[in-house]
Image (cartoon, rainbow, N blue to C red; front, side, top):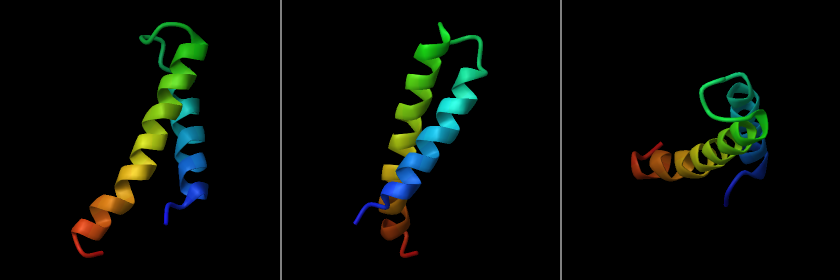
Length: 54
């Protein structure tokens, strides 16, 4: 089962970091891109960990 807390956490962190990155369009765009990256990272990490046997 996917840990929704981790997804929200990574989305918030990546969104906040993306808001500070001036090279990716406007602030709203950076927040959305960062949140999407965070969701992807939080979703893929457990799958990778299970494939590696952790």
